[in-house]
Length: 265
Image 1 (tube, rainbow, N blue to C red):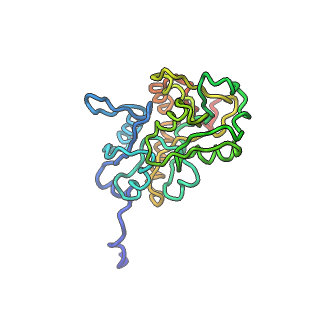
Image 2: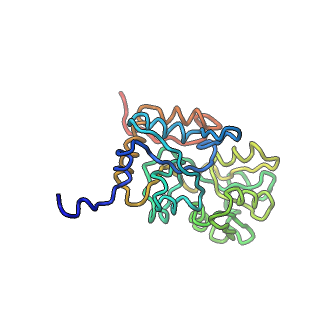
Image 3: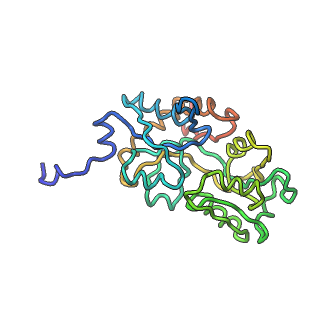
């Protein structure tokens, strides 16, 4: 072996193969991840999917650390876990620090406003591109780029990236903002438990077709390749669809599936 071979840094994939364990970072995000308040037991789409991947590969999952939108990239870079296992919304700026898997599924991102706000018609979003309109979003997240590009005349209230992820929703409820950007699941989950109802508008054409992916540290491309292969396996044998239907608030309708490129005659 070359003299430097013994000093080579162990990759995340090598460590997973040596220990037999994938260390997952995760955050609470229904229907991907839930925690039972009485037992602290995790459940949801993410838990089922990662446990299925581990089972097929002869590995185990260690649910190592709860993360949030502001700290998951630094935690990944600090080697506190191997994979950000709750589905991520990747964008170009985040690609400087993280490598994202192929998409597991998609959703459309749309403006969401208060249901009783008569200024906005269901399929007309042009009214949002005005100087008297304020969007709320979290700094560093994918919606910021979309909002500034699609609604350049509107104001943007940027919350710090370590703020609670529900704060921009409360900006909308309390009329500090007129609109936010989210998907069908965001609308369903909020309206499920809130007396103030919100609604998506412009749903005929999404502002962005948002992919949902796993993420690893930028240099861990071998581990990323392993995850890509596992995701394709789950998509092509129908497991991904079955798991989504199990956990979606509207089974078969909430999320958009990855299209199978093959046709069976």
